[in-house]
Length: 199
Image (cartoon, rainbow, N blue to C red; front, top):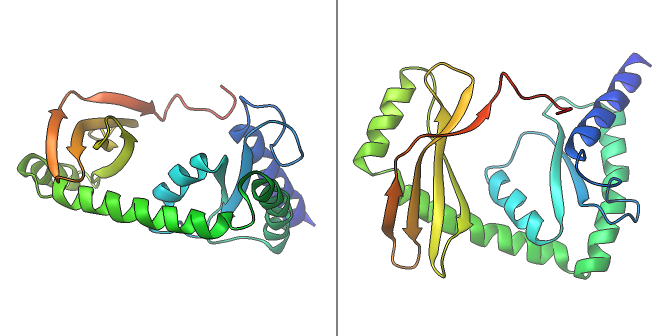
């Protein structure tokens, strides 16, 4: 009984945190963002799945890691059935197949860009510096700037603080596999000491 109550509370808190700027939960017919709940170890293409989900009109909301109760799984699946029905109505019955194709395409493109960037001398050097602190660089191909240019944000913790920063933004021309420009000014993204669910 305690596990059921805790699972339900956990699910409510997660949904309330993720919907603080919207009306409703998006799965009950309201005009809010549609939410698809996820659990388990994040897949290797988790970042691309989230990006493509936005294009399809929904967002992925992680509700648990690998350890999950039957009650939480059942609740997530019930909520997801409503979400999938709404996505099907908006995007057609073959949306899951198209979504998977788009995720794979984004993953291949992003992997190609990141593999080139990881070889740059200043990236190798920064990664070695951060490894001494138990950190490493994370690469996010986060936006299309021009017709063929993508912005790649290279992020990690700043030293041993709670501050998550973007060390570099590299503007990368994908078809030609060349760098257009590099911004090396450190930019604060999050200060995890200040983040709360109910801001």
